[in-house]
Image 1: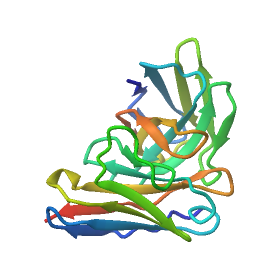
Image 2: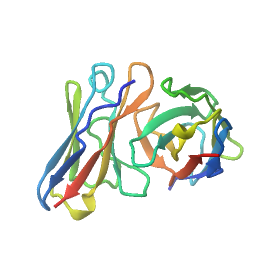
Image 3: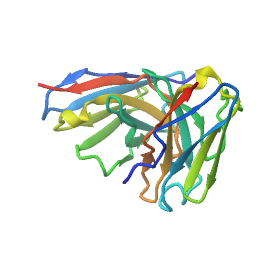
Length: 118
Length: 110
């Protein structure tokens, strides 16, 4: 059974960089696309972007915050960086495995709340 | 990229059937058979219940079914049970090569 676990700071100051890592267990990161999705408190889901195990990426152009993703196949994990964050980036952040390229998400992490505040 | 349109809330009694709609455009829902549906209980991660419009992942009850007509996709839950009370979100692949979610629907089991 594939399991995903997000980790990272729960509090980030405005204008700083939000960094999260997703550790994948029970399966290999190789051969799949992996996404980050966020959900502001009480609101809907927003797809942030995905990274393929080879390192190629596809980011949501609607995001105002600059995004970068990376993957470490030796550690079976991938990461998210959002730079120059604002209060609008406060959300629960989920990592997930894609169905195919971008047909949906079949495995999700439990989510981690990141609050942007001074 | 605008979010897909879902009703804010639907309700039904145990044993009944309900349908949740998800309306987009020809650039997303209408253009591809890549609509997914997710169930989300409070404080929990979303769970995939339907992918590729009408396919159920292994382990998902056959009470969940999906369909699509034009730019609108639908999720039907039959034989409603108390445990079905949750939030439901749709998503679709888009012509821009991205993915867009619906705003979400709260299902109340009366």
